[in-house]
Amino acid sequence: MLFASFFAVLIFLAGSGAQAQVASKADRASAESLTQSLIALHTQYRATPAEGRAALIGQLRALAAERQQFLNSLIQTSPAEVLRVAIPNEVSAHMPGSVRGYLEQETDTEGELQVTYEDAKNSATLHHYVKTGGQRLELKFAANAPKNLLTGARVHVHGTRIGSALALSSGTSTSSFQVVQAAPLANTFGAQSTLVMLVNFQDNPVQPYTVASVQDAVFNQTSGFWMENSFQQTWLTGDVAGWYTLSLSSTSCNVDTIASYAEQAAQNSGYALSNYNHFLIAFPSTTACVWWGYSYIGGTPSTSWVNGVVQIKVVSHELGHALGLYHSHSLDCGTVVYAASGCTLNEYGDSFDTMGNSSPMDYD
Image (cartoon, rainbow, N blue to C red; front, side):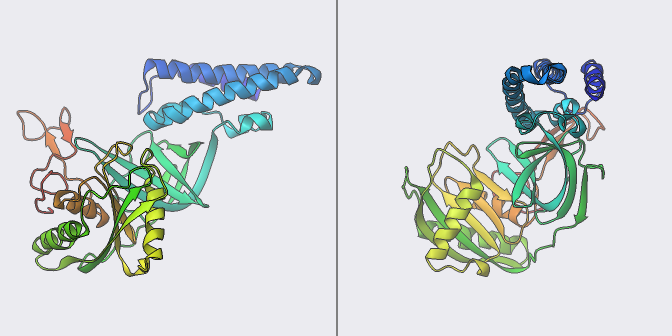
């Protein structure tokens, strides 16, 4: 009866357009078809005598694996659709154990929030993660992603897990996302001790810039920029470490793995990581990373990455994120100054702020 009820609800939802983030018609149809087929096949399995079930187990596993692969992709763009077709825990609990491993799970957990910005030339992607129980889950919001949060906050989340991602109904509803404790505010005054780590990869051990040029870009140009913006209250101090050739390939782009290898290499060279407030990791340009800069927003210590040339406009932007700054936008409403709707948001639209401009303008 439980399976029939869920199947009926799913058919009803198939005709409903009431969702905050609309998937394509093809994706909606695929999500519905795969879920309905799995439920129908399991209903057939349950109705089959024990001696005849062996042949159906393989079909169930194959269908569940196909559906899992599809939902793994779908959650990145349409978490609302994943929530719509999610099989409840009380239904999946009755499926064979070898099938349950492929199914989504309703998840309720608490942990440390991590917020990152992925900065490309003409676009940016904001990511939210929760670090809990030795693992990290990416939070995908069907509606109203939370705003202006910093890495280090403690959050309670409730949603549907697919692989390493968690679909949540809303970032403003306490039933799915709640800040339990705000992130500690870092001291942004005075010397900001920073370790710059220059790394390359085992398949591309080039050194496209010198330690001296990086020293100048970070601790002369960017530090001077910070001094001017803060009225002589904030500046950069620290060291440039490397070059280090990491036992990693330039064909992959896992920022946390790169950071872990870089930090270990610096430690092996005698640098005490606990002496620094910020880490900046720079490496030769690689197409595996589709961005020119990547950074945690806040964090103690903070970590930022530069893909390609180390210049003041990139360093000041990424280390601005490290201090807890978000992007500085513009709103284009056409012929009117402001309108409640019909305006276009430009992610990097503020030409007077380094967090919105490609040049090192003031922090506003």
